[in-house]
Figure 1 (cartoon, one colour):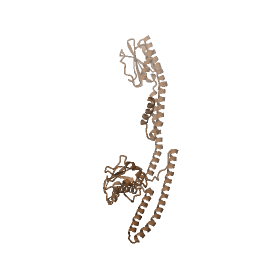
Figure 2 (figure 1 turned 30 degrees about the vertical axis):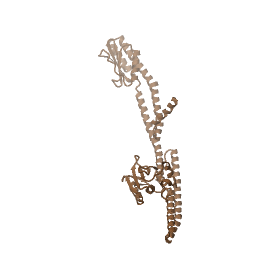
Figure 3 (figure 1 turned 135 degrees about the vertical axis):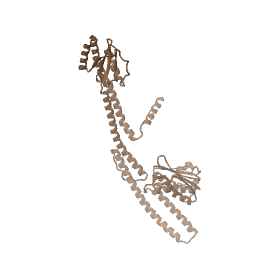
Figure 4 (figure 1 turned 45 degrees about the horizontal axis):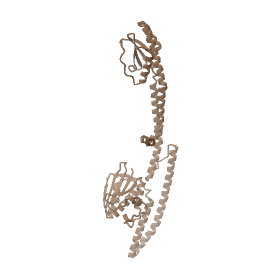
Amino acid sequence: MKLRALKIIIPRQIKRWLPTSLFGRSLLIIILPIALMQIAVTWVFFDAHWQTVTSRLSDGLAGDIAWAVESYQDDPSPASLARIADRAQDSMSLSIALSPIRTLPPRRPTSVFGALDRSLDRALSEHLDLPYWFDTVRFPGYVDIRVQVNGQVVRIIAPSDRAWATQGGIFVLWMIVTTLLLTAIAILFIRNQVRAIERLASAAEAFGKGGDVPDFKPYGAREVRQAAQAFLAMRSRIQRHLEQRTAMLASVSHDLRTPLTRLKLELALAEPSKRVEAMKVDLSEMEHMIDEYLAFARGEGGETVEVTTLRDLIQEVSEGAARAGAEVSIEVDPALSLAVRPNALKRALSNLVMNAAVHGDRIVISAAQTPAGGAEIIVDDDGPGIPADQYEEAFRPFSRLDESRNQNDKGVGLGLAIARDVARSHGGELSLDRSPMGGLRAVIRLPA
């Protein structure tokens, strides 16, 4: 059980550190193998090649130093030392001389390349039986080696390339440069591919909010272009459907309103009576119901998006509720504005506010900007409210909750459905909750 829990926890821990964007994940897929390959190649190079070459070079240098020291031990005269120094300089690139200081200095700290010092130390200890000292950091490009011989100190200056392979740093540098170059190329290519997907997502989001994207053109990889072509075909089908539905609704509206107009005219010319007044009431209710049906079916889909000041729009909506006898308070920043379809949003808010005016005496309309740059519009009333388990039921078209909030005989159960449809067409949402005033709270959340 513990092993299974460990297997479950480890992937979750790894996922927390993985990038969430497509760009980041694509870059990781490309960069991670390159980095691992470069690390492996560098490790193999230093372990199997560079250290071997350095060890052999150190052995060769230690052997040459041992020859020079042994030759000087056999004949410790100045003439012999000069002869040894000339031969070492000509054939081995070694500078040999006696040091004026007759004792070896204390050991210096090892260089940053500790492996180099260890390799040279091992080689000197194998070839020399005398005390020695060396320094690899004091003189750039050279190694200072001193050996105590017959109470004197022989100093040998050797080029660094005699002690170890000096091309290791250049190799590492080239590995780093190539890694950065490949990374830059990968970023450019991935950025172009991801940008195509981002443009497709932006176009789909804008179209979903009711906007138009006339300048959108497919580009990018073949699969991205196929998705973009499918989006354009879908957009054309939806727009064609909306145009056909709008034309049909316009025809239906004309056909329905013509007999209604004739009936209203005949009732206006008829002699006043209780029956005529009742017929006028029925006719008015029928006209209101037709308007509701057509508004729900039309959905305000053809309206263009405009930057609208929310306070002005809410002020217009609140006037209707005030005329209905409700006490309306508005708490909205005058500078708060948002890109919306103003007529559609006005209709949604009007449905919410008039619904609150019918069922309550006091209404508070507030709006504030969200952290993401959108807006949140809240309509509170002090009416009877709706039970929490019937919130979703209230959004269903033609749903009438008689026992709680259906005092409006004219209502056909489409107000909340229309309001939610408008909110969702803007990319937002409409939700219901209990109001602090005791009634219903309707919250419209709209994105930036």
